[in-house]
Structures are given as C-alpha cells and as structure tokens.
Length: 458
Picture 1 (spheres, rainbow, N blue to C red):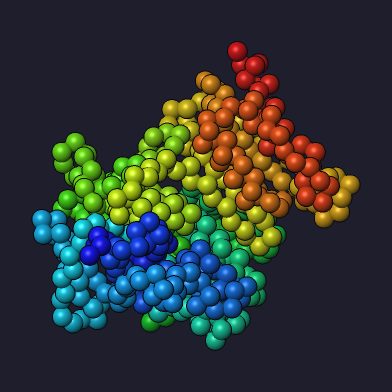
Picture 2 (picture 1 turned 135 degrees about the vertical axis):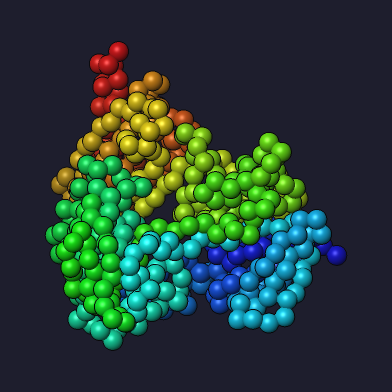
C-alpha cells in the first residue's frame, strides 16, 4: 500500500501537485477533492473564451478526466471539506448539495484551496446581472448574457488585470465598457503611475471609458442592474462585473496554521504552525492562491495570485508530500498580459513598492524598438528599469507596448533571481536579427543609463 496523499483543491496548484506526486511515486494513493464541478482548468484563459478567441470553456481544462484516470488519480468534484483532524490524520467531506458525510485518511495533506472573489460592501451588489469573475460558471453567465444582449453596455468595477482583460474582451464584441477604479491608477499592483498612464492612454484610444480615483457607491435597479452610482453620478448600464480582487480560502486551517493574508508556508511548502515559533507541520502543505510565500527581494510575505506561481508551488508540494526535499525560492511576481494589442509586463518591485520596503531606487525609462528600425512591422516599447542605489542590483522592471514582452520579462526575472547588477544586465550577450530584435535591447540601454546615474550620485 502506497502513501496516501489527499489534495484539497483542483486548480492549477492542486492538479500540478497530484501530477508530480504521481510522477515521483507510482504507488502512492492520490485523491483530489474540489467543490467546483470542474477539474484542473486554466482561470487565466477565461476572458479569452468570453472574447471568442478560444471556442469553449471546456478547452481550458488542462487535467482531463482521462489524464487523471490514466495516472490513477482519484477525484471527487462538487464536494466540500468540512473538517481537518490533525490528530487522526483524517478529513471529513460531504457532497456540496447535501448528502452523507465521509471520512478520508491521509499520510500527507496538500491544501490548494485557492481564493474566492472579493465582494465589496456596495449597496445592491446582489442584484441580477452583477457578475463575478472567478470560475467557469461566472464567465459562462457573462458570455450567455452578452450573447442575448449584444448591444448592451457594462460597468467593470476594478481596474486590475482581470478587469482590464474583461474590458478588452467585451469591447472587442462591440459592447460599450466603463471601468471604475477606486485607486488613483489602473494596474496598481503591477505598474507605477507613470507607466499606468501609458496603458490608460491606449484604453481611451480603444474607447474604453475610465473613471479613475472613483468609487462605486451603489448598484441601482429593482431586481436587475439599471445603473451604478459613482461619486454621486449615475451611470446607466445593463450589467456590472466585479473585478476587485480575491481573498484566499483559509478558514478551514485557522485552528492550526499561521495565517497572514494566506496560509504561511516555508521553502518546502510546509504549512507553518500558528504557535511554536512558526515551526512546520509535518506532512502538511499549502500551495497556490491560498498560500503566502516570501518575496525574493524584500523577504516580505506575499500572495502572488498568479497561475505560474501556483504551478511552481504545486510541483514542490507534490514532490515533498511523497518524501522529496525540493525547495521553493520565493516569488518575484513576474506578470504579463495583453490588453487589445498592447502587451504589458512587470517583474520585481515597482518604484512605490521599493520605497515602501526602505529601498532607494534608481530609475530609468527608455523607448526602444522591437525590431531593427529599417525592418517593417516593428513597434515601440516603453521600458522602466529600477536598481537599488546602494548596490546597483536590479530590483524591478515594467514594460508597456511592443511585442515579445513576456520573454523580456523572463530575461529580467532571471537577472533578478541571480542578484544581477545593472552592469550584469547591460552586458548580457543578446541575439539580433532584423525581423526579431534590435541591435541592443532597450532594457540594456536602460541599464547603461542607470549605471551613469549611479556614478553621478557618488
């Protein structure tokens, strides 16, 4: 009889944990529990199904029932976890719609409980045609509504990644969109205000109405949404979409785990005890959106809420749950998206984050070309690079526009993870071909200018 591994949560982290546990142990008994009806789908792809770029929500399922069966991974969907008993090493579960309770034993338990949409305290938030943006069912409801009301207009509450991706998807379906962001800029967790302005300008060109530094006070209508009140002004709308962030699902662990925003884990993804000097709980792991990990630059606790981070954490948790000893280095929160034809990426710290962490940043913005200037089809790329004035180490980058932003962010993420200085980044031996890249990439030129700034400051 193999080791019994139970995984609560079938998202990116949970399914990756199951896959790697099986990869490293062919005899382990692996069971996944999830309250949703779907196993292992990509939440990041949901806006693109709404837009019609991806045909169907079923296309987003990465870990199919066939895959799980082939790998002898048991799974239970539409199932709630009622209790975790550390002493007996059991969990109590029951069908979400009601039914008999069942007890499962485990040798190792992985919590990949994810997060849920945050519902702000807005009057009228529970009216019909107010949609959330977390699950397949949430986005399916939006898609079906839009299909029936093609000439509708909508308000998106929240100007973060999900809100802007939803705005792009709806606008491309000829729906009038207004985005309301209560902070003083869009993408506040990703960009500094100056770089966010570049995105705002592009959105306005695409006829997206932006209400920045404004608050939705009420959602109006008898049963269905008819308008929203924003700072005393009433905006007519047929529907509203909530995209104001998520909250980690940590409630079931509060009696034994160390909780910040999420469940705090060590470098092996072991859950830390709520007492006993944060010692790890043996054979108890957390990964994905429910987990809180260390930022590689600041050492602070953070919850990245990124699919890429969830997959990496799930891999570590799955391997260690069956007896491995892999470590997770922490996160840099490498992020990329595409809004209309604009690519946006960021890694490490923003200028605002650096100052908050007590780091004095040296910054440099530069505009570069994505291809040789004489080769047709190239686009402009705006790069903002940040270094620590104390030791010239690169601490962050933001990119707006152009093409190939994801690979540029990956390059700079590698530099950050290796504690590269501005000089190290400037001297990377990069490739060149007229249809693919310029002689010297803009981030290399930005590094050179940061070095000059650092010299002048001494």
